[in-house]
Length: 79
Image (cartoon, rainbow, N blue to C red; front, side, top):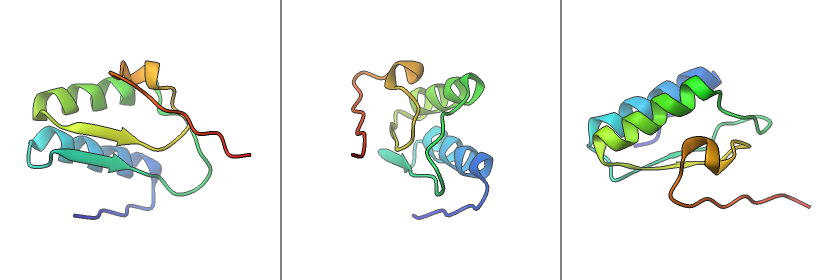
């Protein structure tokens, strides 16, 4: 499935819904536009959804992995 909402908040909501459903082993979020950080509220919601749905969650943006209490994280900084 590919979901392409235009609004950043809608992309996060879609990721939350997909992760929580348990129907997907992996949910990747790659918002369009400039990189930005997910706020603490959304980080907690996504973390909860991924745990509830037993789903791996990949977020490609400027959010530090530690904010999501990730098992591991990778930060790529373009040169």
